[in-house]
Length: 112
Image 1 (cartoon, rainbow, N blue to C red):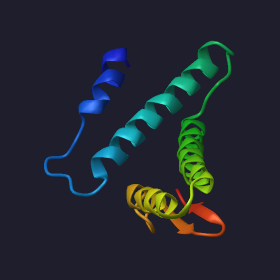
Image 2: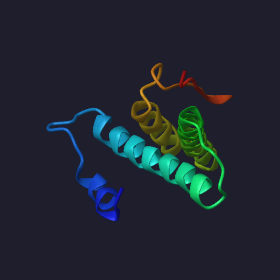
Image 3: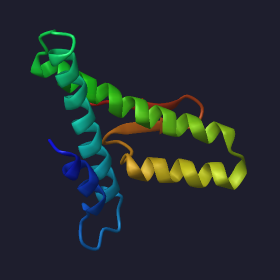
Image 4: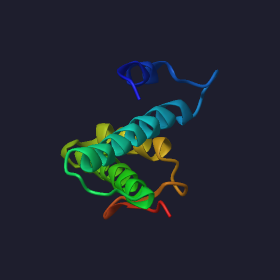
């Protein structure tokens, strides 16, 4: 893993992407690299054995966290701006595939 890989993620896209697939892919790749990095640091710097399923769970928690924080940030917005941003978040996280969104309770993320 190099910094060039991380820098190059912004160029990753699908041709004629009318959905949010390219953006979602960039986020997922970035989060995956971060989860691997965290596991590597735990293994090398803290001298702890890290099992593959632990890295997977770290990735799942990172994704849950970014979805939850994105949704929670809309609570500070008003009216149309809030609805527009919530629709964008729903589109990004493919409602029903990664998360279900309830206007009152927020996202329910299922990454089983």
